[in-house]
Amino acid sequence: MRKANDKSLKEAIEQMLNVYKIKRRYDETAIVSAWPDLVGKSVANRTKELFIKDKKLFLRIESSVIKNELIMMRQQIIKKINDDAKTELVADIVFL
Image (cartoon, rainbow, N blue to C red; front, top):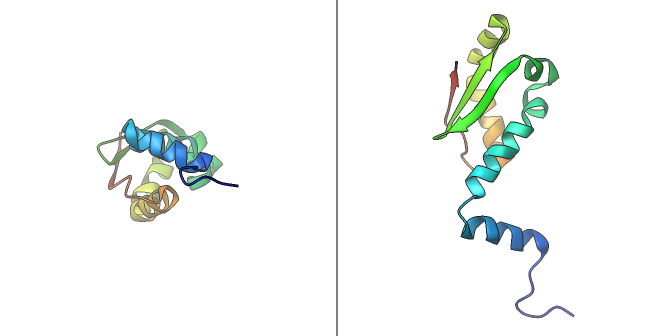
């Protein structure tokens, strides 16, 4: 029998992330770790640097061909990331 103030583990973790104001950082880290699933292993293997700061995804790609492909697919990548995070986590992509 559940009591009125009982919470599921998921709810408790989400509440903790919100209270300590680290939910956004947690979501950013999850996107960085899910990068190979979002863009594929071949692109992820050529990604040298990847981080999110101020709603901008910063990427360093070693292949100019893949970099140009990603530039053309910029809006699709942003949509895929935000859909995966269920919030607007990234507004722009900056290629280093």
